[in-house]
Amino acid sequence: MTERLADIGARLSTHRQLGTVVNALRGIAANRATQAKARLAGVNAYATVAARGIAWAAAHAPETATPEKSGGHGLVLFCSEFGLAGALSERMLKAHEADCRTASVFLVGTRGVFLAEQMGLPIAWSTTMAFDVEGLTKVADRISDAIFERVGDARLTTVDIAVPVLSPGHGVTSERRALLPLDRAPIGTVGDALPPLVNLPLPLLLERLTEEYVFAQLCAAVIHSFATECEARIEAMSAAHSNIDRAVANLENAERRVRQDEVTAEIIELAAGAAAVELQS
Image (cartoon, rainbow, N blue to C red; front, side, top):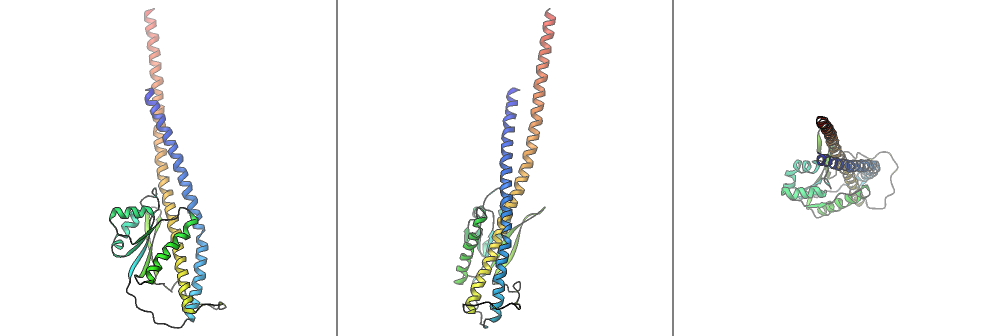
């Protein structure tokens, strides 16, 4: 019985230590999600400036015939970088399994790359997700370079983005939107503001501003994906902590029962000894 009590005590200590680790992971994920979302305001302001420039340049640039292109379709697919984020990567890959077999997929996230290899899904290009918020724009920069390289040599004509979204009660779902060719509808038209000082030919200015606007959209997508992975990890760690709490409660109950059984056994042994002494006398 003493050995059983020691075993329960050891398991209790292990579970409590695991609970401390889970709490730490949950806290780190929550902090990173908050930091990432705080960057969105700046990215949106940057996109707004680029959009206004595009609207002005498009309104004043001479009409030119757009050459027909017959390139393929690309999809920027965001998965998780690490584990302990629930089924985020699995759901994203399952949702876009057909795209992986027909389009050029730009996959972000080491965990997603690993699972795609296991599923036998062809990936055209991949990169790691940032480890912290300081590296988010670098990820967007790598994706942008890879996309425009393929658009420039006509390997790609259209590109979409698929970003994971965590919905309470529904888990992770995929939110898909077009990236290229640029949809001018959300950008709108130029207003009555003073014209900007322009040092570039308007067609070149329009091209550069379009690249900046696409980069801003990629930055926003990277931030959303990073925050969603952190939120999925928070959810997974919360579930793990609840399981640990239940296990600790069960072990504590078992420890009390064993202690009570041990005390009862000692009382019975003492009573039996006293009765034997009394009989002998």
